[in-house]
Structure formats: structure tokens, C-alpha cells
Amino acid sequence: MMDLDLLDEQLNMLLAHAELNGESCGLKHSKEDPSENHPAINFLCQKLGDRTNKVAAQELRIPICEECAEALYDTDWILVYCTYCHKSQWINRKLAKKSYPPGNQIYWLDVCPFCAEIANEYKEE
Ligand SMILES: [Zn+2]
Ligand SMILES: [Zn+2]
Image (cartoon, rainbow, N blue to C red; front, top):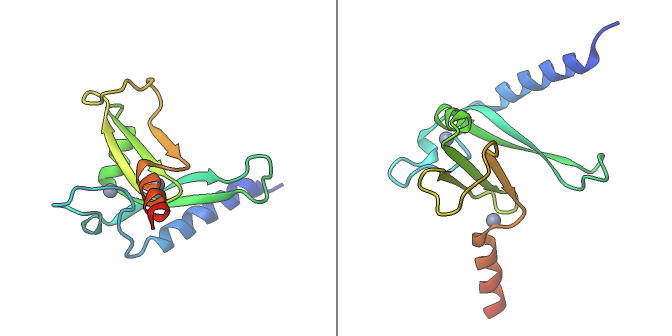
């Protein structure tokens, strides 16, 4: 019997690579060297949505460049990503004011300080 799951995975990978044509990195880079200068080589995937209802769950796919892919394997760097406004921030463990438990490399936020700021602006209007 053919392993359909595996086939599916290979197909997804092929599709992912096809879609990467011309995409630039979706994660934060410096102002001097913005994300647009960094072609994406892969996708960072995260399941989103209602965890009790698997059908409704969406997959978030963020194009990432080589540099970011490497940083994700570097235990000195933590990525914070807001799934609402798609803003991201890199935090260096050694320079961080808070201490982050080891092993956690990516923090997915439903809402971030930037989102909260926008919400406040709307309230003031
Ligand atoms: Zn990048
Ligand atoms: Zn946000």
C-alpha cells in the first residue's frame, strides 16, 4: 500500500517551493537591510485557529530567508511572532531583560504590543 501521508508531504513541499518564486523574507530584518533584500528559501509553518475544531484550523506559512532559518536553529535567538498583525521580533537571549525558558525558540502571540497600540488609537478616535 502506498503511504499517502508521505506523498502528501512531498507534494506540499513541492508546492511550497513553487510558491516561493520571488518571495522575500516575512520576518523582521533591520531598517538598513530590510526583509525585501532577503529572498525566501523556505516556509515557517504554524497551525492556527480553533484547536478543538481541526477542520477550521488554518496553517500560517511565513516565507523565511536563509539567515532567519539559521537563526531559528540558533539557541541564542528567540522569535516572537504576532499571528494577528504578522509582525515579528527577534530577541537575543543573552541581551533579554526577561529570562526565557530554554528550548522555546518561537513564541506565537495572538496579539502583540503593536496590535494593542492600534486598538488604543481606534478607541481615541
Ligand atoms: Zn529573514
Ligand atoms: Zn500584532
